[in-house]
Amino acid sequence: MPSTDVQPQVTLRTFGREDFERLISWVPTEADMIPWCGAFFGFPLDAAQLERYAQSAERPRSRVIFTAEFAGDPVGHVEISQIAPHLSSRLSRVLVAPEHRRRRVGSMMLAQAIDFTFDHYHVDRIDLGVWTANSSAMECYRKLGFAHVGTWPNAMVADAHTIDVYWMTLTRVGWRSARPYRCHLCSRSAAPRANLASTAE
Ligand SMILES: CC(C)(COP(=O)(O)OP(=O)(O)OC[C@H]1O[C@@H](n2cnc3c(N)ncnc32)[C@H](O)[C@@H]1OP(=O)(O)O)[C@@H](O)C(=O)NCCC(=O)NCCS
Image 1 (cartoon, rainbow, N blue to C red):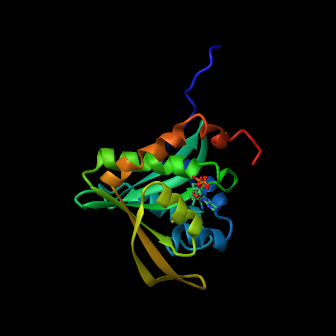
Image 2: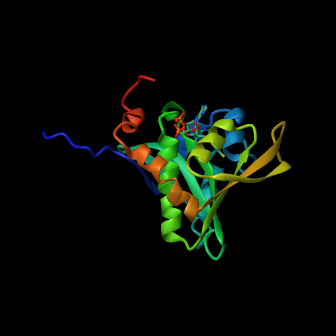
Image 3: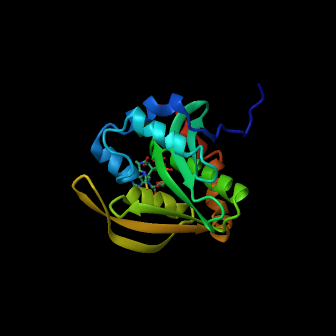
């Protein structure tokens, strides 16, 4: 067979009830839950909470919830909310399956979610909030072009933690200027890092 430059990419599909059990398995402890969702869900995550969550996405223009797949395997979760008439959309509940982290899956999933948002909604901005203690997520967002716009100290309490929320924004213009990094994510040199069949790393 001739060689090809085309590499499998992360794709998004609608989150459904078939995803509940897997998503629950990705957040086995409270220490996993809090950086992911703050106090949005109570620990332990369960099907009843996810049922309400999935139903909330059925209201028009509320939120869209995605499962990310790589080569057909579910590898992540991401949500977009505050859909028009809001002037900005919100990215949240960003999660990569623990065994697939640090392989650029999160970056590729977010790139898909950002493209989807700018393509489908008339917003010029995408916002997100991240716990100030979550430096790896902040760095992941920064590399995609998100800029820090402010911090809310003591924004919420989750478990024993008082959480300061670090707000970041990506503009359409900022997303265009992140093009070299996006191309890098899709390049042949980046793709082997997302070879999920590989156990090396
Ligand atoms: C944050 C998260 C989504 C990142 O996904 P990922 O697939 O592991 O990240 P990527 O491989 O795309 O990393 C992109 C960049 O982020 C930074 N980064 C990601 N994980 C990191 C870590 N553990 N330590 C240091 N930097 C990290 C690096 O700068 C990395 O770039 P590099 O690969 O060139 O070094 C993932 O770690 C996760 O699901 N965390 C738990 C849930 C969570 O915290 N969600 C965020 C809610 S706001």
